[in-house]
Amino acid sequence: MSAPPPSLGRRMVRHYLSRVLFVVAMGLVLVFFALPMLWLVTAPFDADPSLTVGWPDWTLANFAQLAENRYALGSLRNSLILGVGTMVLVLALGSLAAYALSRVRIPGRDGLLYALLLLSSIVTGTAAMVPTFQLMTQIGLINTQIGVILVLAGGVLPTVVFILKDFMDSIPKSYEESARLYGASPLQILTHVVVPTARPGLAFVAVWTVVQVWGNFLVPFLLLRTPESQPAAVLMYTFYTEGGQPDLRLLSAFSLVFSVPVIAMYFLVNRRYGFRFHGGIKS
Amino acid sequence: MSATGTAAGPGLRRQPGRRRRADDVAGLGRVRAGLFVAPALALIGLFLVFPAVWTIYLGMTDYRLTGLAAANPEFVGLDNFATALGDDEFWHSLWLTLIFVLVSGVIGQTLLGFSVAWALRRVRGWVKSVIETLVLAAWVVPASVASFLWLALLDRRTGTLNALLGTEGTAWLIEYPMVAIIVFNVWVGTAFSMLLFSSALAAVPPSQLESARMVGAGSWQQLRDVVLPNIRGHILTNTLLITLWTFNTFTPYLLTAGGPRDESAILAVYIYTTAIPGGQLGMGAAISLIMLLINLVIALGYLRVARAASGGRR
Image (cartoon, rainbow over the protein chains, first blue to last red):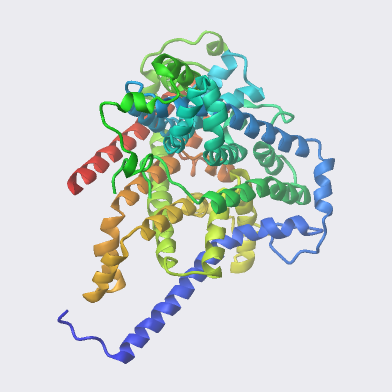
């Protein structure tokens, strides 16, 4: 309070300087994040792409390469199977569990939820890769899609139950009360009353799960050993590490087709529901 | 600001005595509720908890991927742990992991994410959405695509970076492998901190900022005296998650595969190369267990700090 206000001239200089600083800093951030991304949006449309970013010689012919490659389309289909399979499994088991945990006070419920959430963030695919590999070999699920789906589902379920319970806690209970008056069984109440009401929550979890699985590299890389069964995340890696020059026309088109679905889903979710942070923070 | 206000709203709060019956409106009962929860718990138990526990056993065997020890592994007790702890390669990898987590996660992602959120807090319009979209896109793009984008950027002969800087022939990934994976990880992960901090900053009470401005606080002083105390909880959570994620990430493998000569073999990569291509499953499991324990220590340490912080506030 006691300091004399700086003169108008000095204030203007400071204001001007901070504007310049702001613009320069934001420019640097922009360049840093945009530079690697440029290749992804130019190379797929370039008739003769190189690793250097440049103005493309426009064509769509690169996308035709995808159909010609033996594994490209199949791997996208595998990614879809893994994503949808995990999502269906996780939604079915997750909503059953979340509903019961939301409506009935099972002893030790909150402790259990937090322990599982903590566990799922500690036991990552990385730290448990050896026993997971081992387990799948023993029960004969190595090299199968179902094996990958089960491992991925086990990894995301704690978070899914946590999020879904949050959504179900906020559903008014009067609907269920009246359904019960008309003689509906608990399972009927769940499928006919709760699930339709919780649809935004289920949609959020569904998209979130698919995005997680779509980009996951380690689990399928570890458990799927034949190119026919591998998802796009692993095939992409194979494309650029195989001996010889990678075919950049194929590679660039494949990267874009592989990335666009998750980017689209992500921004859709962001627009419709906004970002919600879970696990102890609610802002 | 009650914590229970989410579900029913203040008008519908029930008497504590009737709570259990009123909650269970579907008439589930405990037994059926247990049946509803059981399938999910079984899946989590089998594919998440069991591997974690089995790591302890596997780490005490000489299990190998192929050969004699693959058929009947022998119990070797704590030998693997002794070997790992006496191995320079392990300590080297742990050291690299520490640098990686500190520089790329705790410092890089958090600071950059916070700075972007802070700089854009009062900006509206296309500048904000362009920057946010780009930062987010880096986060959302699948890891194997992101790694190839960086391989293309840093390529020795025809990479864009060398063309821009005029440093033709510089093999960034071979000469500076750690710097490369650190910068890469900042690029990939900054979005999370940015999102978290921008929602935290939006929740700082404007009245407090207003009164700070009234007494003549500059933006630096406002940041230190008003904003940081308000978002302490968010900083803590952000740091925990970033630390765990960075500590466990396997993605740098896609960029350098740990090379050249283990110079960028952070712990996750080291376990993989030991266990699967190296075939020493028992040894890999032992190092995994050490990694799990470090994870546990990080998480428990965080819980402690969080509890102390919230206890202090009440």
